[in-house]
Image (cartoon, rainbow, N blue to C red; front, side, top):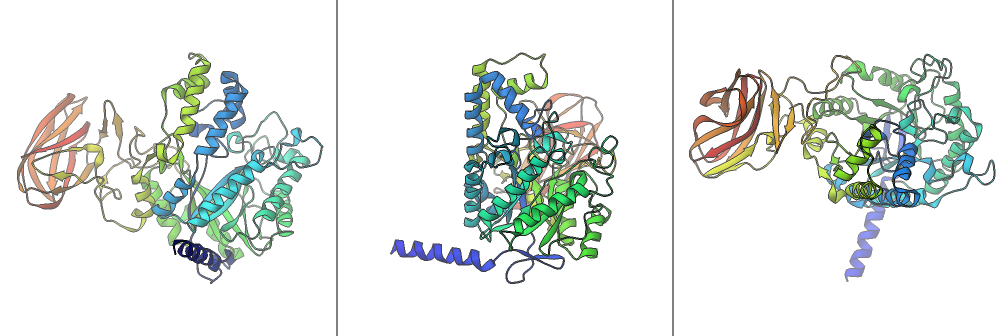
Length: 574
């Protein structure tokens, strides 16, 4: 009976998957086989097949091939290969995709490195031929199976093309001493052949949403000296020619899948590239560090209306939760789907954080500054392998504040407790566990996001300490996390669940460099306790007076009437 039930379950799941059919374009929309609008909400798996140095906190010689070469210098080729094998095995697994589905995402963008699918041109045993490597295809097959099991769409994205597609070297793992994609016919032919091979393999897979044929080209064709990244390019002739040739190769074997194109200048310069040359095409654009207003997406909205073609934000992120919420609210108001960047890395402004270890820290300190001590081979190997193992989902730190900012907060002003905060006789609430919600509802902070592209003066991270949470609130770390650099007018809200009514003494643990701070407490909108003058000094517990609490949930706000202090804990005692 169990066998029959399992068979029926698989059959039903398969029929659901197939019933949705292939995604396709219909005017300015992406639709499924039923003609229903599909808004793609996804995340890119940056750092998996292609390491970008900043994700590993490598800031010098940060292309993947240089990271690998320097690893070989420290631990030798065999152990370096073991590190990369462990990296590919652990970084993204079914557990990651299952979690993305549970969080509320419906799609995944796979940034591919060509060298997992085919040999580089200069390593081909026969010039002009293409040796196919099973490793990249096998990894893609596994990812597709995980996506299908979760009824999530997969977008294939060629992130590192043969030779490299831009002068921003880290993005495509380009070796600037060798001919680029644009300077070698052999590289271009291999790129075309790779897409034909991918399309041939996946032509009958409806859970593949489309082919993102070339990520962030950034190349100055007309004026390479003064416009090396192609921001001012007017013609984009070689870029369009290659994309047309890729499209032809795909259509020789696959008539069903959407083809996604990106403009020059990191995806946004479409000069000379339009109108679209295929009936099932989507325009992708990328958006980083600018304001989230109509002006910031005006160019892509104009193209959408002029050419009656869907648009998709193929890559964005690397900012604060405030920025994430603003951006998603803007995009979905205009029926624009999106793929965030990335799922995980060393750092807090993504859903999952990979943990740094001391051995690896010694490695990157040396790589970033050769004057620093060179780690031993044993120390380096141990640190690198621990890092590779730390990329596993069950080893990652989950940042629920990031997910809440992306999935719930764009459409809700409601606040939710970060943790339970049960008050029963006694309770200790870390200051960093203020409520989940938008700025102005769960907390109020004056410096909330990085808008440096729109205004170079607004080049800040939101959270100055870049730790624990990704809101605008500044968070520091000594023996534990604390809210730092609190400015005048800023406040934090804590939902408390009183299990035992009564009168409670409240103490706040603060520190300050100057004796100017002043705190007011508000319970459910009304002032309570004592106004607290924050003295200069290291961490001290200060009596904020007595508060009478009835049973149930209450909202307590800690308001900085005058700023200039830090806050570590709120302590209730009956």
